[in-house]
Amino acid sequence: MAGARLGAGAAGAVAEVGRPPLELAAHRRPRLRARQVAENIGWYLILSLIALITIFPFLWIVMTSLKGPQDLLFSTPPQLFPAHPSLAAYSTVLAALPIPKFFLNSIVASSLTTVFNVLVSALAAYPLAKMRFRFREPIFYLLLATLIVPIQLTFIPSYLLARFFGYYDSLPAIIWPSLASAFNIFLMRQAFRGVPDELIDAARVDGAGDWRIWWQIAVPLVRPTIATVAIFTFVTSWNDFLWPSLMLPTTVNKTLPVGLAALQSYFSSDFRSIAAGVTMTVIPILIFFVALQRYFVRGLGGALKG
Amino acid sequence: MFRRFSATPYLFLAPALLLIAVFVVYPIGAVVFYSFTTWDIVRPPVLTGFSNYTALVSDPTFWKALTHSIIYLIVTPTIIALSVVLAIVVNRKLRGINIFRALYFVPAVSGSIAIGIAWRFLFERTGFINSLLETLGIIQTPIQWLSNPNTILPIAMLLTIWAGVGYYSVIFVAGLQNIPEELYDAALIDGCNNLQKHWHVSLPGIRPQIVFVAVISSLAALKVFDEIYVLTGRTGGVLDSATTIVFYLWQQAFVNERAGYAAAIAIVLLALTLAFSILNVRFLERGQERP
Image (cartoon, rainbow over all chains, first blue to last red; front, side, top):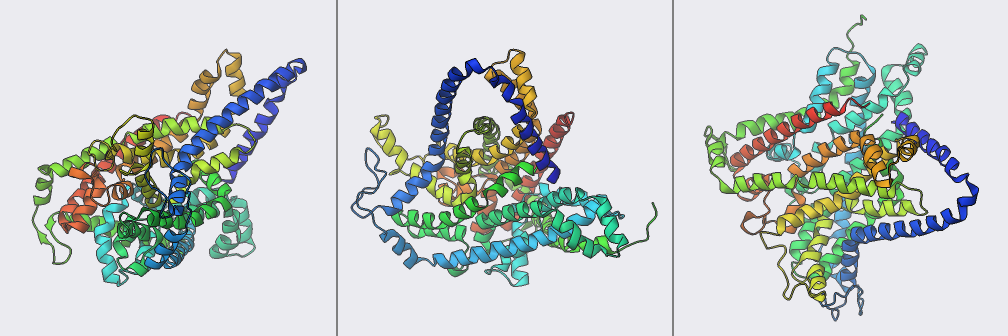
C-alpha cells in the first residue's frame, strides 16, 4: 500500500507538471480566467446540489427532533425549520431508553473487536506474506474462499454456539465471531509483502527471532495499513445490526443500532423522539469520521493496490 | 530450497484459523446438516431428508424473495454509473472540494439503521416527500409509499444507491488519480471533447476499480437486509413485497422458528453467491490484460 500511495503522489506531480504549458499563452489569460470563474461557479452549484441530496434526510431528522409541540410535522408547504424549537424530545428519549448505555456498549464492543481483529489479522497475514512453509498456498486460498460465504449463512449455528459458550445476551456474543476477518488478513498480507526482505534478513543476522522481527520491524512498517484496517473494522462493527439484534435481546445490553431499531418501535408514531434518538446516535460517528477522514479515503483508495 | 520444519508460521496463523474454523467452517457444515432436518431451535432437529428443499420449490414467498434479491442487483450498475460520474465531478482542483467529498461520504458511515429511519421520515404518509409533492400540486392525497407493494422495493433500492454512491466514488477517485495527465492531453489533441475524453481515457483507466466495485456491491445487494428491515418495520412489506432472500432467512429462522427450513434457504443463498462469484472471477480474469 505504501507503493500505491507513492504512485498516487507521482500521478499528482505529473498533473502539476502537465498543466502549465497550456497556460503559457499569456495573452489568452484574462478570458481564460473569466471562463474559469464561470465554470467554477457552475461546479460549485452542481456540488452543492449533490450535497443537498446527500445531507437532506439528516437535516430533516435534526429539524424534526427540534420541533416543539406546536410545530406541525406535516404541512404544505413542508416546514423545515421549527418555529417553536424545543429539546423536549431529547429528554423524552433519554428518560425512556438508556442511550448512554447503548453508547458504552457500542464503544466497548467496537474497540475490543477492532484491537483483537487487527492483532489476529496482523499475525495471520505475516507468514502468508513473508515465510515459506508447506501449507501456505492451501491456507491462503481457504481464507479467500471464506470471503465468499455470506455471513448470514452462519447465523443459525452461531446462535447455538452463543448459547453453548454461555455468552448469549452479552457483548462477547458479538465480539468473538467478528475477531477473524479474511478480508483484513488479505489487506495486511498485501502490506507485509511490501516489507523489504533485506530488512528481515538483516534483523535475523543480528539475532532477532521471527516474533521480534514481526513486532519490531514488520508491524511498524505497515502502520498505515493497520490504521486503515482498524478504522474500517471499527465502523463496520459500530454499524453492524443483524447479528447484534439476534444476540442482544435485553435493552441494557444493546448496541446503538439495535437500540435505534428498538427506539423506532418503542416510539412508533412519536416522530420527534425517534428523530432525537437518531440525531444523538449519528453525531458521534460523524465526528469520528471527520477526525479520521483522510484514513477513510486513503484506505478505500488503496484497497485495490499494494 | 531445503528447510527444516518450523512451527512458527502455524503459530502465527493459529488464532485466525481457530476462529475461522469455529465461526465460519463449522457453521457451514452445520447449516448443510440442518437443512435436511425439521427443527425449531428449541427441540432437537429431526432428519427429514430433502423435505425442506421440496417445500422451498413450492413456496411462493421463497420465489418472491429470490426474485426480489435478483431485482435488487439493478442497484449495482446504477451505483457504478453514478459513482463514476460523481468521482469525475469531484476529481478536480477546487477550493473546499474536500468538504464536499466528506459530505458525500456521510451516509456510508452513519449506519444502515439510522439512514433507514431517516428515509422513513421522508417517505412516511406524513413525510417530506408527500408534503413536497402536494405543495407542487403533483398529488392531491398523500401516497402510502412504504405500504404500497409497488413502491417499497424501489425505495429500498434507492436508499441503497443513495448510501452507496458517495462510498464507492472514493474508490473511483483513487483510480482516476492514477491516470497520467498526458493521456488526457493526448486525447484533447486527438480532437476529443471533454465528455469523449472521459469515455476514452477515464473509463478504461479505472476498469480495475469498476470490476472491484461490481463484485463488492453486487454481493452486498444479494445479501441486503437492514434497509428492508427498517423501511418495512420488520414485516418485509405488505404481501412480502420487499422480502429478500436474507430477510426471508431471518424471518423463517428467528420469527417463525423454522430453523431447518431457514437452513435450506441459507444453502440456496450460498449457491447463489458461489455462482455469482464464479461469474465475477471470470469477469475479473478478462480484466487482467491491463495491469
